[in-house]
Length: 116
Image (cartoon, rainbow, N blue to C red; front, side, top):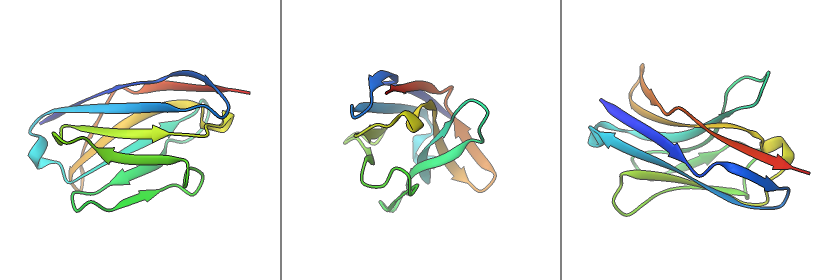
C-alpha cells in the first residue's frame, strides 16, 4: 500500500536540466526497487532508471551519463536528476515502486518537455 506522487516536470530548452522527485507514502518499507519510466506520445513506456533497495542503479543507454537516480536522506523520495536534456527526452515521466514481482505502484506522471 504505497502512494507515489511525482513533481518537477516542466519545459526546458535542449541542454537544460530538470530534477524530478517522487514522494512515496504509505508502507514505504515494503518497497524493494524504485525507478523512473517515461512514455512519449505514440511510444511504448520505457524504463529510464532504477534504484534497488541494495543501492545499485541502472540506466537506459540513452540517458547514461546524463541522468542520475537517487534517494533523499529520509528515504521517502526518489529523485531523478536530468542534465543535458534532449528533445528526445520529452515524455511523461512516471515513478515506479516495486514491492515484489507482480506488485507495482505507479505515480500519475509528470510531463517533461524539451525544446530545440
